[in-house]
Length: 273
Image (cartoon, rainbow, N blue to C red; front, top):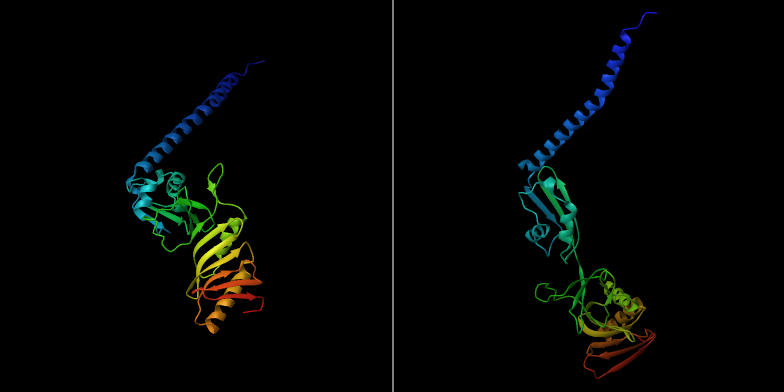
């Protein structure tokens, strides 16, 4: 039988082809990587993507320049090189900023949306600094009478501050009662709240332009507010020479009312006003 002289040549060609395929793939990957590196370097260094405009929304207390300084942003920064998560952490570190969101708008605009804290009241203590709480009752900063500019805000006394692993909080039924009263619009303009674990809530407020003290106790605040309004209207319509200075609404069925000049004491039982 005659030998097939083409067999070895075919085997050599197949072998060469099988060896060259991985080499080709490696070369392609290398070229692709180099191209990507070039594109990355070009975009990171290109002035086309430099920040030209920073739009800030939602800030009232903190001005734009302060927010930019907090984020440590420079207008020459490349917008693609920014770590948005890091910028956000820097901004929300400010005690007046509750949350923030940052977005890129290519090629050169950065948008920062902030949500500032809404102060609800000042909680005063004897031995530690006064603290501001927000609308959820969360302490968010030490009160500064000079810089915070909050002259028309309720002042709370008698609460206890509790320490957790992460922060300080107010808690308990007495604090819940304080928040419930503050959330209501039925007691006029509340100036002060005194919280007492034995007597409950006592507020200093104004109803129908009359400044007064109201002892509320622990519960039934809506019922007590309605009772106070009924009695105030009764005084305004029938006892015009008297001005209420104190309500004792601890028991809404047996309300004690004292006039401003303190020369009359009216015990108004259920159905009496």
